[in-house]
Length: 171
Image (tube, rainbow, N blue to C red; front, top):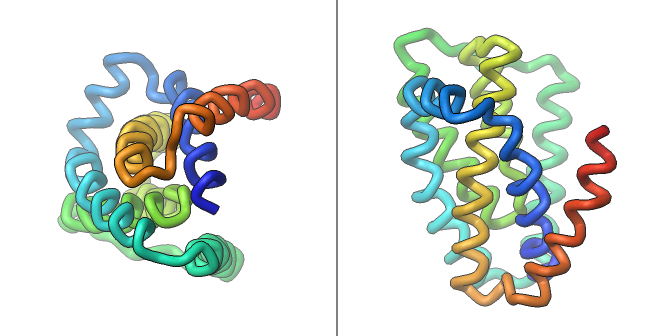
């Protein structure tokens, strides 16, 4: 499972570069969602330490649990209520949770999607924000997985090769 986690970091990181919307889009997104971006590293650090200490079957279970919980909540039509006064503090929590889950499972999207839907982000802002979030978390996870020994040079090269089929699937 450690190898799968490591390989899975590279393609999303490389493929989300275009989604940010250039430097202007990144700057706008940063201003709007700074608490998420500031708190992602905290979650990644906690999650990476946890991932290095857990057995592989716990990591597989975490992937399944996160995916199932998100699917059930979306299928049931649950939407997190969020007032404009709480967008920034809830963004900080979403950053920590997403970073933590990302380091355990490489599944970073559910907390961020729930947050952006609750914050009523327009489709263009939603796309740019997720692109920047995934870009930043890709860098953080790459560094974290390399530092705990999950990501080795051969696995990084395999991850780079996986960009080809992933990119083909996007078009």
